[in-house]
Length: 308
Image (tube, rainbow, N blue to C red; front, side, top):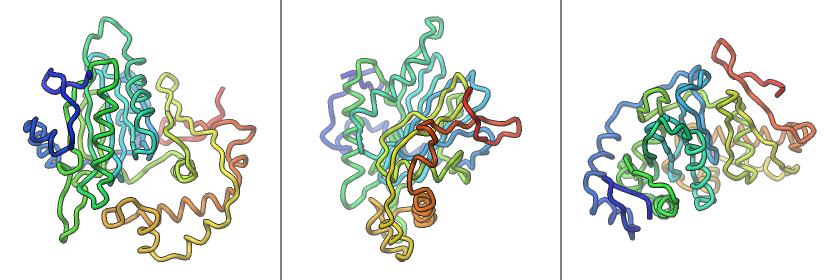
């Protein structure tokens, strides 16, 4: 069990309450993290990670200075960083396939940290979830901790702002205190964050997840290229039903945490459905079964490019 806290291997906790009781400094670290100001990240230096995506890079990357993700309610944001190389991977996990996702996240960092001159250790930061009624957050928290314990590498748990330690009461309702995080790739600083811009290809990427796409690596840091797909979906006119429903109905049936979603959740769902109706077959988005590629311009925007 190579998950460590303060350089000591930990036993699998029976609950998150048990974990925080055994390691009170994790509670204090979570409180400190939650109290930090939320940073609005400049999109010109950002690579945004959507649900069921991950991306890894290093300080040598000239296209990406910040990895970030938000809109996490029961979802957890998982960040692994190597202190020697500075390589970092951020993932937005929803519990759909935790046991197969965690090895991908760890490998993404170790594969970028092979220089023996840059000795260091792997550090883990977990942020997300809250004290939700269905206990979805609790289950995901424990599954993530267990999955990291099963990795062969020693991994040091540094930030654990999850579930009840990320819970706040707003008008009597439980909500997550921190919805989003960013990491400054150059310095390694991890901070609460929000992201007004979630590109490139926000609707396409949302459509991939909405139609059942699994966790995907979206970035080649050596080339500075974002790669989306290819993925498959078939025409489904039935989803147009949701466009005529009121907000409460959409929240009730299409969210794991209807009372805790951000204000733009319903519009995001409707935009995704509209995209799928306008592109009823994935073949029109991925001609010849080829992925979509995006590269950062000198102005800092992501543009669609033909991969050479």
